[in-house]
Each structure stands twice: as structure tokens, then as C-alpha cells.
Length: 310
Ligand SMILES: NC(=O)c1ccc[n+]([C@@H]2O[C@H](COP(=O)([O-])OP(=O)(O)OC[C@H]3O[C@@H](n4cnc5c(N)ncnc54)[C@H](OP(=O)(O)O)[C@@H]3O)[C@@H](O)[C@H]2O)c1
Image 1 (spheres, rainbow, N blue to C red):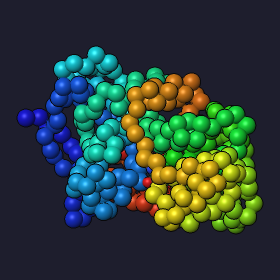
Image 2: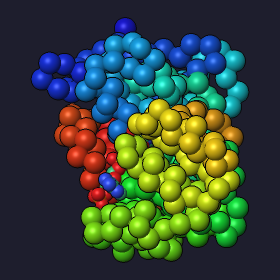
Image 3: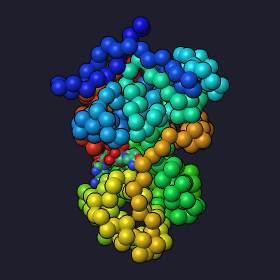
Image 4: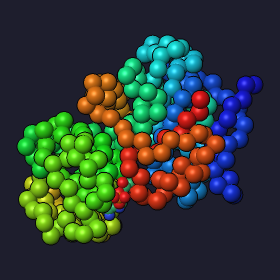
């Protein structure tokens, strides 16, 4: 059987090992990975040794960009040679930090020709998250005031662009050194969270996207208007937050991103037309997966950390 390189968790951290190359099953494609990006969920899974679906940690990686190598029975969406990108199988193991990965075709979309593999691999999980938060949950309308926490991070920097695309007035929290970057992405107002508590200076907002959790939940609720929307990307720290929010007609439940073909095609269209772009904080070869995880674990990345395989 053919083998390939894959990142494997071990006692001394992540390392590249030689494993069997997977075969595409029915309604699966085999992708030759060119680039794969790291998300905090990869880091948490490896650190906890447990997956979100309860299984043991394995080869991490959900976000991929590459070339279709082979297709399984029944696949009509792609042919060998097609360039694709997507978020594979989340929250079950994606195993994208490898030379090859299998994927359900509808977890992918055709990669826009003008976006290289590194920048395409940076987009899927964070863009799906931001799109599903802003469109499906918050139904953001033109002119609405939207606050995005950790605006310079992976989710934040695409959420800023997508909220602007939806016509919102976008407010972000970020340290001052990242404000110029966020202005270049279209942010209208920025709050340096190291100097100012956003809860002291904001009120009456329509939507808050909370990427921070902890006491950010209560404080985010305090800056929303009655009937606004709080999107929690982490489970609320306080058990009564959702009830408290409901008393003010504010939906505030925890949201988990889902693979979605239509959303991926929207992301491909926006990226292809230059309306959505990923910022890369760090690009490293697959062998440096541990260093890439360490960078994400700092919580200081500006945009995304990407691994390359070719
Ligand atoms: N529920 C879901 O489906 C879902 C999906 C995606 C992500 N998430 C979660 O959302 C969180 C964010 O993900 P991510 O990929 O965006 O993380 P990330 O890229 O690691 O975020 C890094 C950014 O956070 C900023 N930051 C750190 N502390 C901050 C604070 N107190 N206020 C404002 N900004 C701050 C940093 O900017 P400074 O250097 O300026 O501090 C940095 O730019 C993670 O916990 C992740 O697991 C959940």
C-alpha cells in the first residue's frame, strides 16, 4: 500500500510520521493537500487528547486546499486535477495535516483561480463560522452595528470583512498595534481592549460575535439592545446567560460551525472577487506542525497560521 506523511500527536508533541495513504470511499474524494491551516480547535483537541466527538486525538486538521487526486464511486462534483478547498468533516476528525486526505465532496468547493493554496487553506473554518454567525443566526442587515471580539484573529478578521459586505457598521476589539490592519479590512470603529473596557463605551448594539467566552458573555449582553443577537462561539461560562438574554429577547446560545457546500461556494465567490481575503500570520512546512500549534496557542496570531506540504 502507498504511504504518505501525516502529523501525529505523540508524547513529545506533534511530529510527522509515515502512514498508509487513504483511499476515497463511495462519495468521497482524495485530495493531494497543498496547504492546511491551524485553528484553535486543532490545538485544544491535541492538548486535551480528546476530540469534540469523544474519540482520542489523531492527525489534526480541518482546513485544506489542494488538488483532487482521485474520486470514489458516485462523485460527479469534481474530477482529478480540480483545485478545491474546504473544511472537512468538522467536528469529527478531518486529518488534513497530511500529504493526502479524503473528504466528502460537499465539504469542499472549487478554489478560486486567483487565490493561492496557502490563502485558500486559511479561509474555510473561520469563514464558515463568521458567515453562519452573521447570516444564519444574526441575520445582519445593512446599517446594523455589529461588534466582533478578537477582530484581528482568524474568525475576527474574516467576520469584519463579511459584516462589511453585509452592509453593517463594524466595531472590533483588538490591541492597538492591529488597528491599522483592521481598518484596511473595513472596520469602522476599533477598541483597544488593553486600554478600554468595551462595555464602558458601547451600548444599543444589534449584534455581538463573542470569540472570547468567560466574562465576555455578560459584558457583551450589556452592550446589546433588547432584541439584539449574541453569537457565542464558546459555551457560555455562566449557566444563566442564555436565560438572562432571553428575558430581553436576545438569542444567545452557543453555536458550532458546520460544513456546508452552499456556504463554501459563497466563500469561494467572495474570495474570488477579492471581497474576502485571508491574512497569514505564519506559514510553516508540515514538519513544523508543533511550532504552528504553539503560535496559535499564544492567542496572538494576526489572521491565520498555515502549514504547507509541497
Ligand atoms: N463555535 C465555533 O464553531 C468556533 C469556530 C471557530 C472558532 N471558535 C473559537 O473562537 C475562538 C477564536 O478563534 P480564532 O481562530 O479567531 O482565534 P485566534 O486566531 O487564535 O485569535 C487570536 C486573536 O485574538 C486576539 N485577542 C486575544 N485576546 C483578546 C481580547 N481580550 N480582546 C480582543 N482580542 C483578543 C488577538 O489579538 P491581540 O494580539 O491584539 O490580543 C489575536 O489577534 C477560539 O476559542 C476558537 O476555538 C469557535
